[in-house]
Image (tube, rainbow, N blue to C red; front, side, top):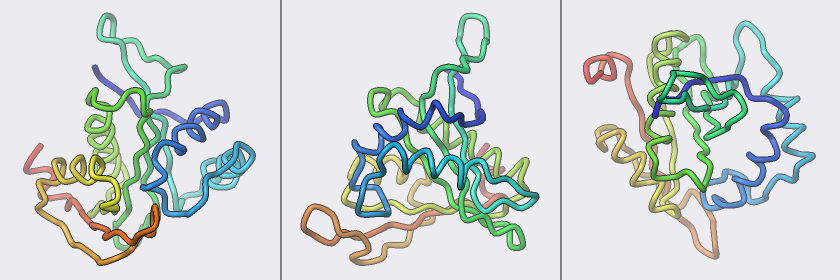
Length: 181
């Protein structure tokens, strides 16, 4: 199946809020957002655009295989290019996939779309990310996508479920990404 980047809408926030409850080990904050906070995030961060926005978030929606039609009502994932450093061409990738749709290739397709957006349209040079080892599935996912080529482990960065977990920082560089395409 194919996917496309789309604008996030306020009616997507309820689903995203529910998805976050399934991935507490990956969240940077120790608390879950309630729906009001998720709507505040939408209005305060997602909707605040400028010529050089700090954060860009996208809905990842499917394209039907039968007739190549975009499905604007279906939200498969939310992806982001955050902490954009426009001077140096560096941004951070984020991804949240519908828990009911994991293992269907949505994550990889979403990362491909986000990297294409970063390198081809936003003129970024480096896209980096972070994953906590408290989530084996996420660490394996990002490891497979980066071939562990650019990995840096930092000790005890995340406290979750009564213990400290290491974080792995990973990245793609634009020239290498183009060579592998």
